[in-house]
Amino acid sequence: MESYRFRNNDQMPLFGLGTWKSEKGQVFDAVLEALKQGYRHIDCAAIYMNEDEIGEAFTKAFSEGIVKREDLWVTSKLWNTEHQREYVAPALKKTLSDLNLDYLDLYLIHWPVVIRQGVLSPKSADDFQSLAEVPISETWLGMTECVHAGLTRHIGVSNFSIKKLEQMLSEEIVPEMNQIEMHPLLQQKEMLAFCSEHHIGLTAYSPLGSRDRPAGLVKATEPDLFENNVITKISDAHSCSPAQLLIAWAINRGTAVIPKSVNPVRLQQNLEAASITLSGDEMEEIALLDKRYRYLDGNFWIVEGNSYTLENLWDE
Ligand code: A2P
Image (tube, rainbow, N blue to C red; front, side, top):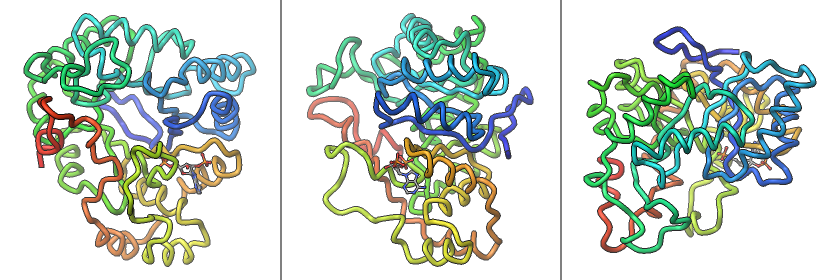
């Protein structure tokens, strides 16, 4: 399985399992099945509210010899309510306790957005704090302390723009990973070039368009990646499904990719897709599909009177 090599030579499998929207009651079976099939990279987050059940699957997989801890890559993410420096290590310890692990391989700042601690679903400006009040540099100190304490091997960010990454290039630890939405309609070409120049890894989330998003996050009309003519033409040529083609495209670009599934058949199909090789011509044809289209446009962080705008979130 192809992997991304960190600055210290640690390797993360490019192909992983996403667990956002994997419901409790289903995620235990999904993660255990994935590990049995040979998945070696599981992507988690505190806000997915399912880490305790994923931890049960890890414990069972370790005790039954399905996988060893050292052969598994586990990522998790710091939620927006825990950005103060002194909140970071406790948040990570809670995640470790839920996942039944001693350490994480990678811990990410989930969003460059701060919500007041204790607020579950922010509705008014008062529920937020600005990045002037709680700067990313403060959160990053907390993240760095977690590395020194041995709670996580690597640290990075998610949903960060090039501008925000640039502001972190002189930190003691430069972010090692940026996890962002990426698929043929949102190819993030400038980000890819920037991250490759600075040895920052990239992970593609929502690689299949996250069609199972909660209704509140779905727009009235959205493009369907699975119905895209170029995607279906090339997937037909490889006798694979559009979903498999989308996964193969991400791996062929050298980015990590974390499709979510709770279905054993689709889990297997997705794993197999990681070894499909696309030709240069096929990659070029897909490159033309870019529309800078976000399924997750970040609108949910913009409420009247708070400091966040789509412009200052994405810096575009
Ligand atoms: P399911 O969990 O029932 O398999 P994303 O990774 O972009 O968030 O997309 C996840 C969505 O895509 C889920 O609805 C998931 O459903 C579905 N999905 C995952 N793998 C496949 C596949 N190989 N073919 C079709 N749909 C898939």
